[in-house]
Image (tube, rainbow, N blue to C red):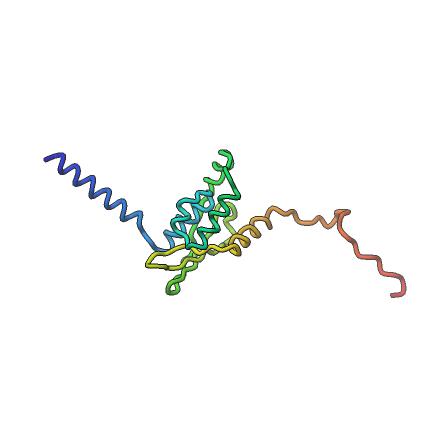
Length: 158
């Protein structure tokens, strides 16, 4: 009798755990997808992506190849914070920040297909992210630098 009770409790706990993990709302989908994306863990991201987004992720995965362990540890430290979720019918826009640049708010778009929220991430979205990351890495020009072009002095009498 004790085994039956133990099994029943185990099954009930497992069922509760599985239903809790199966939340399909824009916020939870975005949190899971973004974490996987920033950690370069393609499998969870693929499961929550539209077909076009899956193609993009597969291409990015193929281009990135194997990531060295030290770089992977660094990527795994990135945290994503969801700031806002705006639903409009079968579309949603999720505003978020990352620990890489907490002041920079980015947007992730989701669509509802067959009653499931999926991420719709495009090359344009990727470019926007890369532009915002590269902007911080580029040094500002030093006005006193000799490499800058100086305007020609004005001629007398003009």
